[in-house]
Image (cartoon, rainbow, N blue to C red):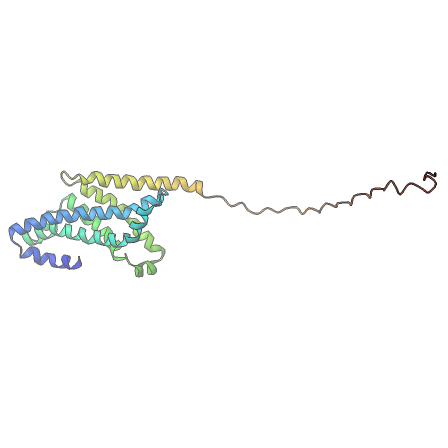
Length: 223
């Protein structure tokens, strides 16, 4: 995938007009697949906040980091073949700056936000950053909103509804998590000083008299 990104300027530069049209179409496909993979990486978090634990969540969590890396690389190819290469190689860098629309600008912002997440998606960065690693990867929620706006501004893109559903699921899962968190936390009662109590003295029971012992010899009947 990295080699494809590095080779994309040379491929587009030496491509014929017919091939360039096919590369642009491929760029749209790359964007669609990138969005699908990115949405898959959000499923474990949504399931976890809704307290849903099943095999699907476990499998996605196992490959979540690799899926996210592939999604970002496909998004780079999408941006390159759709916008950057056609304008930079075809029209020049000056025209490239003036040709940026709100749709492309939102895409650039989303890629900029996702770049540090992609760069730190490894065990080494997670160990070095510690708690900061998780805070850094929280910005994916901002990226999701921008990706939704990026897709929504595209003409006739039905994927905007899918992106909106993902935004609603993320928001509702956090609301559910916060509301249920108060119920699951059991307050710890501080230990109270107990007044020492003296053990109750149990008196032994009074011995019972044997009625045969009170009968004297004179009371014994004689024959």
